[in-house]
Structures are given as structure tokens and as C-alpha cells.
Image (cartoon, rainbow, N blue to C red):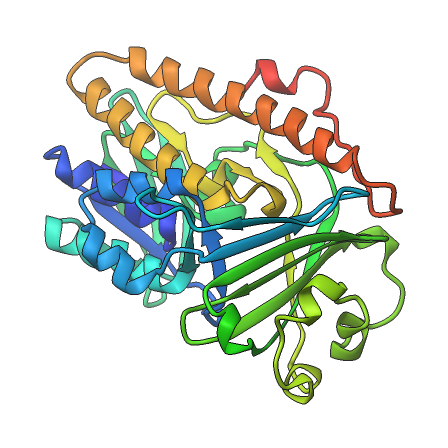
Length: 355
């Protein structure tokens, strides 16, 4: 088994494979390291991590539960959801920390890691896949029975196979950092504004981020920290401390568009995570979906290795259905907004039938 990628979906897929006794090699392309920032992982994603073998004590120690989530969308009133004692709720996640945790677990489980400069080509043979890659300036070949593309938005394996990515909107995010008031540690807030929506989250130590999401085509001029602070809703302002630190923050930008591959795989490979589909952060499902897809893709390929390809067909049907459901739910949320940032998307004709 070959896995391509260096993120959460890749290492989760590798961990799932080795736990099922599959000899697994992860081709880890060079990637730009991104700074850590707090975000939310929903309860479903947390349960998937437990199913993958990570311990509850380890997860809670690294990712505390969200104590309170405040949200307001459109003309609705502010909704405050406190943590419910005894029930697993969403947690404050550090994506880099989770990536390292999954990588360590996959390594300890027996996965082999091969750092490469880039993937040169891949083709399907009668018995599997054949990849060529560049390492230390030379080109090498590596054969495998099946492969998983978990290489993020780049979709390196799928792109080499000629599979196109369809982008359905132009959502972008701008992020600044600063301190939270002590009483709002491990809290989050999601609030819509006139030209988009905002998200605020703080970890257990009070390190917080404020993110502004809007349609990229509507942007004019440079977005700086002062511009972002002017967009902070009153419900979020009361959670912030030391506004001078926030004002001095460097602005980080992210592509948050919804997108999907035209096909979810081939005869001997499947895509999962951001390589397959990317989701609007408003839904808080991107990471949990990546974890679930990694688990299901590994399970489907394990069955195929034993001669049963029915789970591969099931996987393709599941990702098609879940993406269609996501589009419908996303449009319903944005339909409640009266601001100029409203973005309703429609999959191109025929897209959902060929995934």
C-alpha cells in the first residue's frame, strides 16, 4: 500500500492501513510548515480518533473540550452553547499537533515513511500502481498494489492521473492572533457580518485567533490587522484582551473554497481528505470528514486486497452522497444571511454522477 501526503488524512490513512496488517509506505512530499492556531474538531471527529487507537487521555490532554460556543447567523439572536458535562463535545484543536500525533502513531504501528521532493508520475498497471518520484535530485520508481491520495488540495496523485479539481466558490480567510480574556479560554464564537462571517477561538492557555471569511472576488485593497479589527463583532470583542497585541498581529491568509475532484479514484487508488473534497470551515466538518474518509478508504482497500471490491464502490457512493448533502446544508446556512457575502454554490451538471 502506498499513501501520498503529509497531513492529517495521510497519516490517519497510514495508521488505518497498518492496524489492518497492510504493509504501508507513506510518500511524504515537501510541504510548507504553517504556524499552529486553535480551531474546532467536532465530536464525530473526536470519536474517529478514538476508533483509530488514540487514547482519550492523550487527546483531552492535548485538545481541551470547548467550554462555550457562541454563534449568531443572519438576523437570529446570539446562541450560547455551554459544555454539557458527561457528553463528548467539540474540542479546541491544534492541527499541527494532531498531525504529529497521527504520524507518530502510524510510525509506531509499522508504517514506513519516505520523504520525497515531488511526485513525478503515476500509472495503473494490471496489478496495481507504479509511481516515480524525485529524491535527492534523482528519479526512483516504487510499485504498490493500491494507493491513497491524501496530499491535500494539491491532489498530487490525482493530478498525475489527469483528474481535474472543480472549485465551486472563492471563499478566503484572513487571520490575526492575540490574547483572550482568562474567562474565555477554550471558547469559540461564530458570527455572521455584512460581507461574510467571522470565527474566533482560544486554546486553554488563552492564545486566540480571529478569522474573517469572505468571497475573494469582493475584496478591494490590502487586508491588514486594522481592517480585520474593524470587522470584529461586538459579541467577539468582549472576549478579547490587549487590543494593541491584536492590532500588531501579522495577517495570514488561507484558501477556504469548496472544491471536489471529478472522480474519487481509479481501479487501484482512492482519494480522501482535502485531496478529494474541501469544505467551508463554517460547517466544522473538514477535519472530521478527512479522518472518516481515511478510515473508510483504508477499510475499502483492505477488503479489495482480500478480493472484495464492493467496499470501494460503497466508498465512492458515500463520498458522493455526503458532498451533495454538504452543498445543500451550506446553501441553507448562507441563504439565511442578508449580507453581500452570501455565496450559494451549485455543483456543475453531471459532477455528482461521475465521482
